[in-house]
Image (cartoon, rainbow, N blue to C red):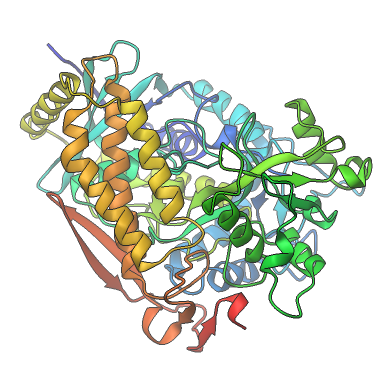
Length: 581
């Protein structure tokens, strides 16, 4: 017999968005249960991300009195190049302020300047300084506090549980079916409403700053249930340390003028510079634009690093060398947060090079939501990185943490209100039985393919063909390869119980990556971080549109959504990618 549990609001995911949703739902006086793939406060993206200044972006006007939520909104829209829902962006810009002060009241120790005001720094895509943080560990410090609030609120938490599929009947969500990670036994959770807060998909690529297990589970479950996903072609990729520790290489480190070497010891960046562009100009651009983008020359660094690795001049583990040893102790003085964090993990920038690679850092798209964080499916809500529509082709730095708190709170509140006014009967029974049968079938697979090896192969296909440099040829190749793996390899992996979690991750990787590749192929232009060498221009006349993907059976359909210009309207232009200027 499979165990069945019931609750009012079920939160799937235990990162920043999931915790904030649980806290808000509990305020509505309903039963709330949170499911974590790992351990609350330890696993997931929020506590495991690190950069020079990991930021919560909020327009407090302390760094510059000219800043305001309206200016924040304009930056979200402009940086996103208009392919987003401006109403959702407005909610982030305006409600980030209240959510910030809530975090402060909970005990998050955001750093302050000498005058006692919260320290606000400049970040990617921002007109004014609005990035608040605690240093490299902002996400971890936020999670330490949110974890305590969740437990003190009386939210029930089940750890080490992987959700496999949503229970959906007649476009209504009734809960989930999943697997105990340790016992590998299926279990059913029935709920009046469900909040997806499963984070992103970085672990489907060779290089990412995501923790293990971030295999696009939420996107895949939503797609299989019939929900639409949007903006799946837009992701943030940037130079990162991906071995020993995960770390975004940004800001002050580039201002110091690093040297970039390939495996043969050759400095290579100069070979990629357009005529008339100085290498230190590129470093200055990169110091204020961490993610790869076609909006400015900083992306030349990502193109150069990617090309060196792609053409076989990278290290055996697919990296290049980033060297600041020639500046010595200046690293300590001018990049103290980065130096301290990396030194704690055995990497001393003063003494020698470190290995970096263009790594996936954030997906800007996800499950399509409205202002109440509702998906297309009644009773199903989404928040954080798994949700889509609030960000466009690029995303201002610090907006991820702000987004997960703003829409985490909204998802929790509206899911709780929906649950309080809902009743469910046995509508879920037949659907849950089918999901359990499918889990059991996967658990019994006894083919010849090692699922861990297959996972590494898929990650390589996606990193090489669908990250920095894309083309119709490379994307079509990747899509055909993934479909072949789905049809021929996945049914013949060796599972027999012990590899069940990896096999389930593979299923999610495939469903998510097909949706992602479909969107990348469909958008025939270059916009933000989506660079098509065969369409190297941003085409506002034809492509100021949001691409939505829906899965029916094994088929993926596309739909174009016209954004509403409630705040800013674009003046249509044809804009070449930076190196074609």
